Image 1 (cartoon, each protein chain N blue to C red):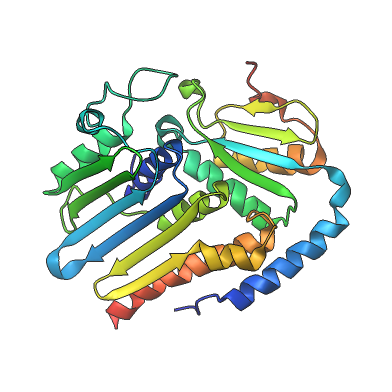
Image 2 (image 1 turned 90 degrees about the vertical axis):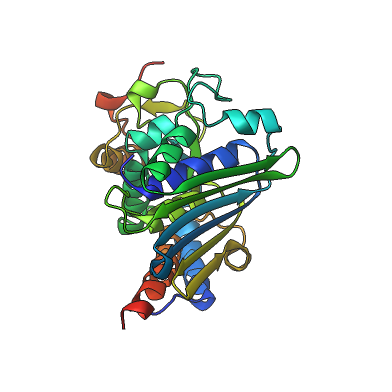
Amino acid sequence: MRELSLHLLDIAENSISAKANDIIIEVIEDLRIDLLQLSVHDNGCGMPPEMAARVIDPFVTTRTTRKVGLGIPLLKEAAEMCNGSFELTSEVGVGTKIVVKFQHSHIDRMPLGDITTTLLHLLVANPSVHWVFKYRFNDNEFLFDDEPVKAEIQDLPLSEPSILNCLREMLKSGIDGARALNVS
Amino acid sequence: MSTIKSLEDLKNAREEALKKRELKATSGAVQVIVGMGTCGIAAGARDTMKSILDTIEKDSINGVIVTQTGCIGLCEKEPIVQVVIGEAAKVTYGKVTPEVAKTILLEHVGNGKVVSDHVLNI
């Protein structure tokens, strides 16, 4: 995978597989401390400590269609290659939290990539999940909670063209806005 | 910097969508499912998804529900897209690049013609 936003999509998929209905995704870019941090926090089924310790092994997976799971090991390696860290905490019946840190300026750090598409995708394709997205660039935070959005559109699917367009704009302008404030 | 879209904009978007849907109420539910396991994502499923959402938006294709599924065990055929229209049998497409995804939406979802070059027989 060439973008961190693809990894983010991948680990959020794990939360969906764990039957989470509350997922918080946070992206932090803090140039002052040279940090890029991704985190996904869910209320899914969680894992017992033995399993949580083993998921970083590519030969451990819950999938039944093949015997290797690559998402988490790949991400962990990518972070460690960039003076970063990978941390997973999980509790059965409570949920799982993954925090991945990268040295922002590290030459091998993958670009964050198209974060808007990742978020839009998760939102539209998993309407039964309550999504919260937080993006912080230095001191500027953009918060997107899908609850008021879903209350507003009521029973219509999020994939209606006009709604899709509106959601994309909301996410994109929020993220761009947080970044732009720092440039000036 | 563009202005942040408000809930007011969303309300307008909803009304617009409602009007369009009333015109099309007879055609039956259309579901487009994208495979989103690690294999799918690594093979470019997000770009495929992006193309699907972009096409829906730009060509104003109403009444389509886009969802996702995990790995279905055909990793080598990813990105995989499935289309279900009304009561018709599910059609599974393999190696769906963004261009193919667009064709599927315009031809299959839009005109009811299956894009046979990319259909997987499973």
